[in-house]
Length: 289
Image (cartoon, rainbow, N blue to C red; front, side, top):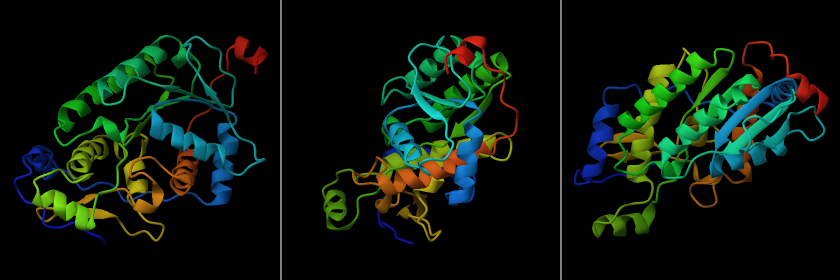
C-alpha cells in the first residue's frame, strides 16, 4: 500500500470531512471488474432494457469503455438524449450531460427535470453521477449528500416503476514525491488530498445509507483498487483515504483506456444483474427502434 504521509494538521479544510468520516465505516469492499462472459451476459440483458444515465466527462469515459466491450455481442444502443419526451426503444442506454461541473446541485436538478419531463415513463433504470471536479477541500459533503438523498427520494416516490441506482463520486490521483513535498513545504495544496477527503466523506454517507439496501455502484472503490486487489491510499494525520490508482488515468482524473474497460465491464454487469422485468415500451418507440 502506497502512502503520502506527514500532511500536517494545519490543513484546516480537511477537519470537517475528516471528523465526519470518524463516525462512518470506511466503505464496502472494492468491486471487481466482471469476467468476459459475465460482461457479455450483462450486455445481452441490457439489450432488452432501457437505462438513463446523467453524467459529465467521466461518465463519457465510462460510455467509451462500454462501446469497446465484446464487439459483435448483443448490446444496448448508446443514445444521447436532449428531449425528455423522445421515445426510447428497448435496448437503449440513454444518456445526457446534466448540469454544470463544480455545481453538483445543478446536476441533480437537471436529472430530476428530465425524468419528471417524460423520461421516467420510458426507462427501467436511472442513475446520476457526480464528477471529481464537483468536490474541493471545502465541500460540505454532508449537506451535498442530503440534497442528493432528498432528490432521489422524491424521484423514487414520483416514479415507482424506475429502479434508481446510486453511484459513488469518482476520485483523482494524489500528487506524490518531491513535488508534493515542495508544495507542502511552501504551504501550497497538494493535488488530490483535500479533494479526495471530501469525496470519501460523501461516499461514506452513500455506502452507509444505501449499501445493502438499494442498488449502489461503487465507482470510487473500483478506481482505488489495483488489478491485484490492493488499495491505493494516502494518509492524512495517520488516517488512510482512497485515491485513484495512477494506472487508470493519464491526467489524474479522467479514465484512460485501462480504467474505462475496468469500470465499464463492472457497470454493465451490475446493471444487467438488477432484478426486475423490463417495462413494455411505448408504441412510438416500437415503431421507431
